[in-house]
Image (cartoon, rainbow, N blue to C red):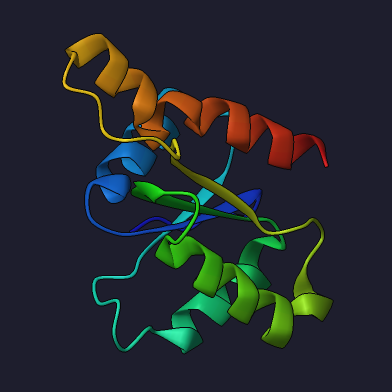
Length: 125
């Protein structure tokens, strides 16, 4: 979706829109965005290329942190791309709670609410 060299965001679905909006709001950060498009099979070549371009990877997904696909992607990167990393693989996901029905609580539940914090933490590493 977008090439960059400071930090790579690997995402899919609505996370692509969140990442694109974040990148547009933060032009001072060169953000590489990989839209996975398919989750089975995963595009391991593109994931590896994203790690090679940035050395810093944030996996962004709408699912909860525990049990989400981001854990599998992070494990694959750690196992197959460790030497290419400049920082630990980080994940930005929704809270490990039931989805709230109140709109304000739902906004806080979603991963988008923690995206800036996650990117800034990864950039400081």
